Each structure stands twice: as C-alpha cells, then as structure tokens.
Length: 310
Image (cartoon, rainbow, N blue to C red; front, side, top):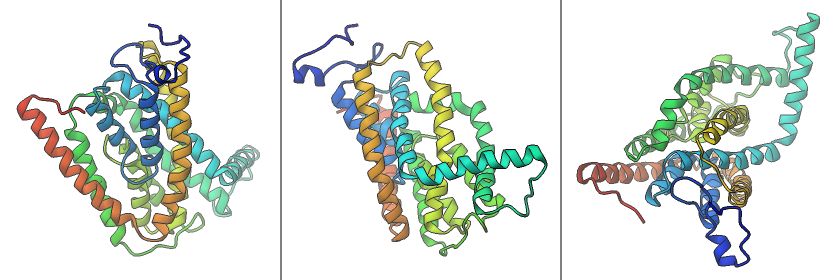
C-alpha cells in the first residue's frame, strides 16, 4: 500500500506500483501503454484492442487495467483539442449562436451555413451513442475478460472496413454537402467502436470515405466527433472504477497521460498524411495479419487452458 511513498532511486521509481488492487502497473508500464494508446487511438488499428493485448500478455488485464486504459484516453482527448483547436472553438461559438437563434425564433435549417451544418451533423452523429449507455457493461466485460478471441475477430472486422474504404471512389462532400444520413451512419459506427479490436478512428473514417466524404474532412469529422464520446466515457467509467477500488498512484497516471498526449499529436498528423496519400490499405493488411494471429493464440489458450504471457 506504499504507492505514494517518495523513492529517490530512479530504478525504484520506474518500478513504482500503480494499481493498489490487482497486478501492479509500473511507471515503465505506463510509458509503454501511453505510447500504444497515443499512437493506436488515431492510427486505424484499435487502441483498445492493442492495450487489451498488452495487458493480457503482461498479466495486467481485468477491471484495474481497463480503468487505466480509460484514463489514457484523456491524453489523446487533449491531443484532439490541440490539433483541432481553431475548428473546435469555432464550432462551440456557433453552437451557442445557434442556441440563441432557436431561443429567439430565428433558426432556419435551410439557411444554415457550413459551420452551423457541421454542428447539426455532429449532433446527429452523436444520437446513436445513447445505445452505449445500455451496452457499456457488455463492452466493459469484453475488455476486462481473460480471452483475446474477441479482439482477434474485431481486428479482422477493422481490416475489412479499411479494405472497403481503400477501394471506394474519392468523395468530395464537406459540411455544406454532407447529408444527415451520412452523419448517422458514421455515428452508428462509433457506437459499436468500443468493441475491443475495432478501431474507432479506422472504422469511422472508413465509413466516412465510403459515404463520399472528402478525405481530410472525414478525418476531422471523425476526431472531433470523438471528443464528447471520450468525455462521456471518462465521466461514466472513472466514478464507477473509483467506487470499486481501482485506485491509481498519481505519478503513474500523469506520465501515462502525458505520453499518450505527445504520441497522440504525432499520430494525428500521421493519419492526415495516410488518408490523403491513400495509404490506409497498409493498415488493412496489418490488422488482417494481427487478427489472424490473435485468433490463433486465443484458440490455443482456449483449447489448452494455458495463457500465453511475456
């Protein structure tokens, strides 16, 4: 229970336990998982799936591991705010202006400009997230269980979506021409994205490309749409995890979040380049190979009863 004690030795500090109940997480573990979260949250390979695999093979899966994964999302959330600060600020201002027009009876859907339509499209895309409230226990159970078969199957589904988006014709839709049913389709995709191994960014960007969005706009819409989702997930899950006793030491959390923030910023720039240069297909092959390997290992563990660990 001495997680908050001060250690003057650097080597001892790097091994400072993090989780008070369950298998301890060290600061080195936090750095590794922060790097994985920061890169895979935005690259189309599934951050939850990769974190789940790391925690599985290092013996750090379970409720506490799932809780730490949620906290790491705070770092990537900050990365989105920094990368799209101007756009997000404009949308917030436009949202309150729209609310004012509604209150005064001056709102007109037909006369909505691109910024206002973007706000409305984002609202429509978030409607399916109401389903997550009813499915959150199911999602949490998949992330916290001891099997990795689910991760393997959903890595394969991510691969299918990436292959489909790579084959579709380049679209030109932006906020002014994007349809509300397009936003709803992307929103439904985001609502099922908490499944471990299904990439939120990869699946939502892929569906955006499939419905005809312009490539850079598809990236921006996907990332900005994820902001309220991640905020809501943290509000819902952190309170429950603390009540259940999944307490974390502050140094480990801070270093993990900062690591995911820095790596997240790098990954956002990389995704923009990947999408515009039509290189998503490489990640389709990566998730295909990874999915096959994970399914094979999961079946081996299921049949033999032996857990593969490193």
